[in-house]
Image 1: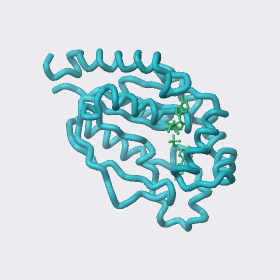
Image 2: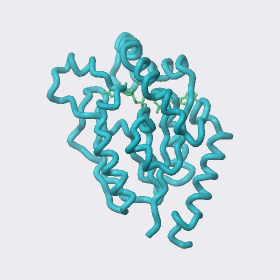
Image 3: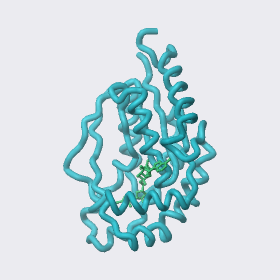
Length: 213
Ligand SMILES: Nc1ncnc2c1ncn2[C@@H]1O[C@H](COP(=O)(O)OP(=O)(O)O)[C@@H](O)[C@H]1O
Ligand SMILES: Nc1ccn([C@@H]2O[C@H](COP(=O)(O)O)[C@@H](O)[C@H]2O)c(=O)n1
């Protein structure tokens, strides 16, 4: 039995992880990839009053159900399908819906804290860290969170100073040491992306990952 190749993309919030993942999906072929964003595994806060939800530290490892993600990666590696949770950032809750994800030759995992968890880290074959300066990450996050996640300028600034920045320094930045490749600036770095994609293609041709070998 061939083993799926597990590629992991970490980096700070707003660094460009999703942009890199989207480019890999496009160029390697989304039909060959099972895509698991760690964001999908945020804990459901529906039992907490709305005003308290807004104050939760979403940048600490405990805010995510990582054990479920580990279970899902192990299932996919064992060629079993999984049900990916669908998370709603505007209400901080897990929806009733799930996305059915079939096993594929490539499993693509993405998230700010995925290298900070030893049990998760050991499942990865290729570890990519997207490294972008904090000022650029903050500006990108501010625009995105207002546009897509129902936030205000004040709430984004408060959250950044209270939790995003300190947790980045405590957990995300130190986890960079586990990366095999560091991509400066993210999704529009075509030189780095070409190298990463060519490595993925080479690994997919190898005996371990190619059913025709
Ligand atoms: N290299 C880049 N230059 C300019 N904007 C970018 C770049 N990479 C990503 N963005 C934009 O920044 C925002 C956050 O990027 P995203 O890939 O979602 O980051 P992450 O997943 O790391 O939070 C998005 O609106 C995206 O279009
Ligand atoms: N209810 C939530 C859950 C998470 N966040 C923030 O999302 C960031 C991670 O996602 P990226 O796409 O930016 O990598 C993380 O920094 C959390 O603060 C949130 O705001 N609300």
